[in-house]
Structure formats: C-alpha cells, structure tokens
Image (tube, rainbow, N blue to C red; front, top):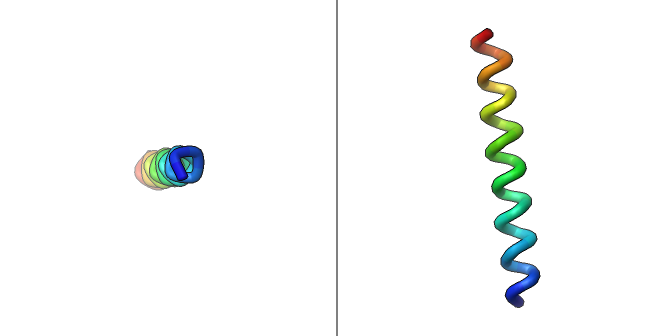
Amino acid sequence: YKNRHASILLALDASVEAFETAQAVKCA
C-alpha cells in the first residue's frame, strides 16, 4: 500500500511539473 501511494504521488508530481512546463512554454 505504502509503495503504491508513493508511486501515485510521484506520478501526480510529474504530471504537475509537465503541466507547469507546458504553461511556461505557452506563455513564453
């Protein structure tokens, strides 16, 4: 359970980072 939770958080973190990068590119 703990490992699954960690990987979900990692995936969420990665998608947030990708989203922010996309936003930055769009605004640039």
